[in-house]
Image 1: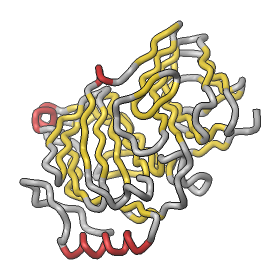
Image 2: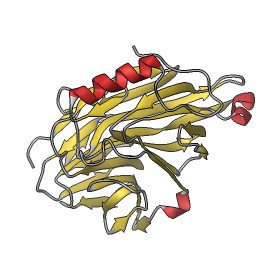
Image 3: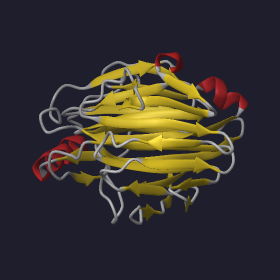
Image 4: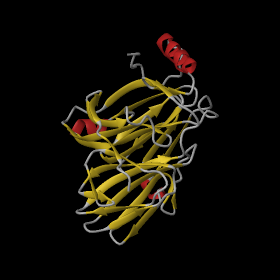
Amino acid sequence: MPTSTVIKPRAEEVEGQPILRPLPSAKSRSVGPFVFFDHMLETEYSPGHGVDIKQHPHIGLSTLTYLFEGQLQHKDSLGSDQLVRPGEVSWMTAGAAIAHIERTPSSLRDQGSTLHGLQVWLASPKEHEQGEGFYSHHPADSLPVSDNLGVRIRMIAGTGFCLESPVPVLSPTVYAEIHMQTATTLLIPNEHQERALYVLQGDMQLEDQPLEVQSLVLLPAGEALTLSADGDCHAVLIGGAPLDGPRRMSWNFVASDHALIKRAKTRWAAGDWPTVLGESGRIELP
């Protein structure tokens, strides 16, 4: 197997929540439709504290939130108001203009809570990047699972491993959560042109090459690869078809044309933007 490219994420903080962010990076601007990957590190919030990300805008992308622990309240300018729990998918397609908030629900804020999860952005195909916004919530039991010989795969979004998620992705995608018990193996098929593996926990090897925990490993195209577990392991596989052209990213905006980003910034700064019902706070342009 050719030497894999390994991306070590940079540590950042979003409104007090520590994260690791391997995408985008200088080594890779995207993997399939994925242009942004945040690992929300396991964080304990004492009573009276939690996540509170005020209104902010998006264009040209879909956000997908998937939690391992804790809860988040999602509200957006479409009128959606949804509690997101572990194992569920919160999917929001921005289209030409959307705003949303995410916060720890009041019940957990009062008693204290733990938050741990992932949030990714998927760039919309050009034909959809200025379309209508859309939100959908998918309960944990709606996501297909394969559980065989100590390897459990849940298809969060897209297709792979003979599984298909109900999440309405806009281009060929794979986003799979993988749990492997000690001394098990998994063949990662060559189903998608671009793929990457993020190791959350455990000692894993790819074709006998050890993988570093909390790193994103870009997999070589055109090859089926064997993943093995030396202990109980947890990882996610992301990828899909290459983007239909380069994407520009600036703050919370993704677009194929810089003029779309410039216009979005002007509109947000002027207050000419859809708003979230009942929310007055907002995050200003950096």
